[in-house]
Length: 285
Image (cartoon, rainbow, N blue to C red):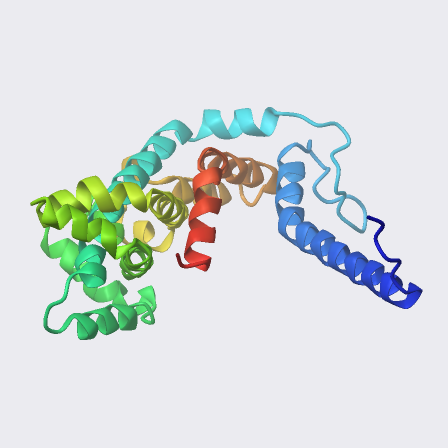
């Protein structure tokens, strides 16, 4: 069956709208990817190429990996990398476990004060970290967590955003599945572990990515808690490059690129679950 021809004005308007959408996407891509490309280009430049004449050159004239070698040889980047990886993995694991344990009763169980507890959790999301920084530091010092991995992990071990996000995921699970499991004599803890968690696995993966990025890029709390370079995380190590090389941006850019590689790898390997979890949160079943 032949499709009817559209009037020229409508067809032209549709092509114009498509062109505008593509132009907006190209502009958004340039704004998003542009700074990273500039950072990568700076890390590959040789001496005297960062500032040329009256302006800055985008592409290196003679690309070199010497900046990465200098950074790796002059600073214990491997130690910083392992410290950040240890803190991030422990924080993500604790966040997924504790947030899911807290979100399940808020979503699927009825008890007195449930709504008020949830409202209180949402209220804590409006409080900036700078407001909690001093009491949190006093608490960490009183517990003997100065210069410790546990002290870096605990502020990220359970977050209000994680509880809120997983609560919404648990609410999307059909009630019939939970009723059948309860009729078979399954306990609440077993129901949470064997039924609910597998059903919200995409949301767990999405929260894991968010948590990993937040912990990996955290600079302020490690700066406050740590003064021993042996316990420094990668953001603090990159910050040391600024002082060590007197603002030689080639080495600073090389250190920043090294710190971004693990985040890109995590996103690439979890992209399928990340997109599925985002769509599942946008369209409630």
